[in-house]
Length: 394
Image 1 (cartoon, rainbow, N blue to C red):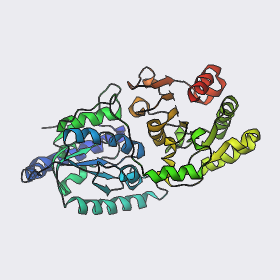
Image 2: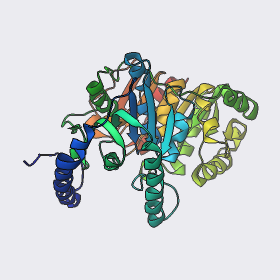
Image 3: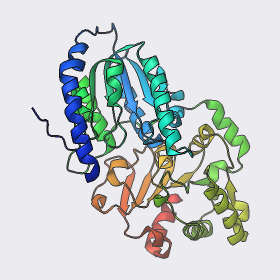
Image 4: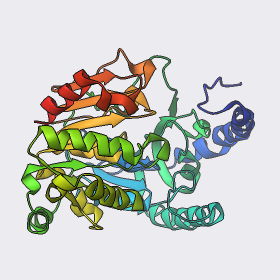
């Protein structure tokens, strides 16, 4: 019997996914799933999470761990993720083991595609070796597009597996899901999967968090002067299409410096931020003593900055999710992914975005405000927009 699947892929990929799933379904029905009946349950539940995405995806996923613990106080949670996401889970008391698997489709390291594929299989072999030592009661793969990890299931021992079939291999899952036609948030999709293990959670009430070592905060306070009066600026994004040029940042920073008393602290690990810092110093000499640059400090320390700073300005990227946990945050979301990745905030958050399908959608969380702007490159020329931004940041 053919299964209808609503794939999340370009047309040229659809036929490949469809053809592949014919063979996956046959294998799953007659070989793989019958073998699961031999697996024994654990005296206390063990849950394996897969997330082959990036930092923002990993951070949002981690918000559900305390919700799971409420339902299953003794549950063991292990996580399979790319090495770039490891620091998200390092200090998380809800996570027992972190298993590294670098999926080539989401690997942004500056190496060739061939080396990414080699690294994919190398880390997959290591991950399978570690995972085979355990029998898991449940597995959940939160990815609903791009790189999913269902293919690894036949090589390990999982009694009940849940995830999305929109990128293939759905036949290996005990229950596969597909994306709705209406606007959705990524945490909504996680909540759908968690219902299968009797955990109720929603994006309006879930608590955003990220544990840190206390000494990181002390290091930052010693390293950076005026940190508590700083506006953090994160001008980088994982995708260059979401970034603004130096002219945009110079105009925006100039107005902020003129109309507020805050220091600006630029944060970024690429050459772009360093170049922007030097150009700001050159173009705005009267404010040079109020503009700083973090230089290259560890990611764990950069991620601690929002706990100290007054506010932050970010793009549509990981810093928007991180900063809105700890401080007031302005998100300028160019070429935005829209409602699906609106940050789940704890602190006041103003999101300016150009994603037209999300123009009438707002996140139902306290102190969260979203505003559609057709051309974000021109916000500093709009007096009303700039007044709203400065008032918010003050």
